[in-house]
Length: 499
Length: 97
Image (cartoon, rainbow over all chains, first blue to last red; front, side, top):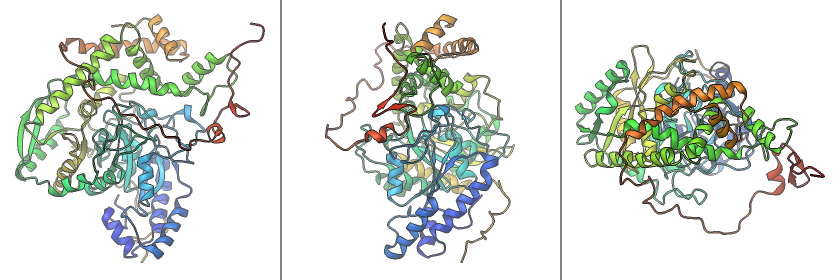
């Protein structure tokens, strides 16, 4: 549901500077909406008790100095695998119970330094491992479009937060599709930038060579500004690139749809794709052609091995990254273990959920003596071939269009009994991570059951601005409603805000 | 490939996970199913292909500049058990052994 105060980041900034509303008023509105809807949707794992105080301070500062940034006072929610000093970070895992962060993620810190207000931390699949938020130790998030359906995952809470109007902007992380698939399922825009665009410092690591941070928003221009704000070099993440993130703004302004070459990989429109999604994408292709872009047939022959490569590489890295959770320095520890070894093993067995254990075991196996060559190293070589396919395709097109997900949002429990079928829901998104490429999901309306459908755009490295410009065009062709999850606004608020 | 019960127990030990009997049985079948799927990679010809990232320069290292870091109290703030300025864990060496 749209909030009664502003439509976009720039409209927020104008309303704030014109004194149409105060920051405190906005903050109270979103917190109170979260409070009233969280019991049914389970979007937030914690809210920020300091948010109102911060809003008041920002209001007072505005009177003296005026706003420095459109983000001053802007409400944001962050996935609960981002660290924020003084706040709990759970990663939706029992093993981090009681843990309070001692630092703030660079991405979050950059938004805070511009004056953004973090309202709360959102639900996820435990350690960002999953495609439905059903792997959360704190129960699943409900899809705001249909509470019997999953919101996608792993950033399901952040996607649902924007869809349900609990915040106009949220942050997620994407290792194999964890921003884009929930964006598609919840009918909002979500972008995973190029690997190296945004610092991962302070994001709890799952698969360090694949993880990237990105925003969820309703408007492409808001996602763009969030990327510019968070992007750029960070000495705390040596994989960040030196490029000036404002290049995305320039590319956004300069990109034109007429003449744009859109690559269509036949592999990603074939068997296994839900017909309702194929139909929506077909309409989109016609509309884009009608706007002057040109379709180019491309081929990504190794993309069908994406899932295979991903579940070897991501699990291998996870098995190493998650070895730090051992019950020694923070979080959960079993009571009265027999000895040190038992303390490690029992803490980890009881602290981690099933999917996390499955992935640790798989990754440990793929790296173990005797199997590393056939599994881990082979996967790294096929990853090279997947990257090569994209480089070749981008010689003939400016970006590639695919569906985001092969199916509409599925029902709770539908895939939890069969891990492999859950993995296959990332079949179209996973290769962008393996190739380090920017990719986004933008809504293209609803399917025959009234559930959101997403279109997926993948671009060459550093092309986020261009991708977002096309997403902006798609949004104008398919104006997306937000679901009516709640009749009326929380008590105490009137349409149009307090005058 | 199908994993045996002893394969799973071996990997669980390497992973520092004390799986229950029920978990061992379930993981044996689930991991076997996943491995049978990912083994589809065997059909890809990778002769002459380099591992991803191999041709790139290694990730640069940050300059080694001393700076303030977490205080002892800060580091210990979340400790499940502590003794003075140390994290406390179960005894490793028994007296008289």
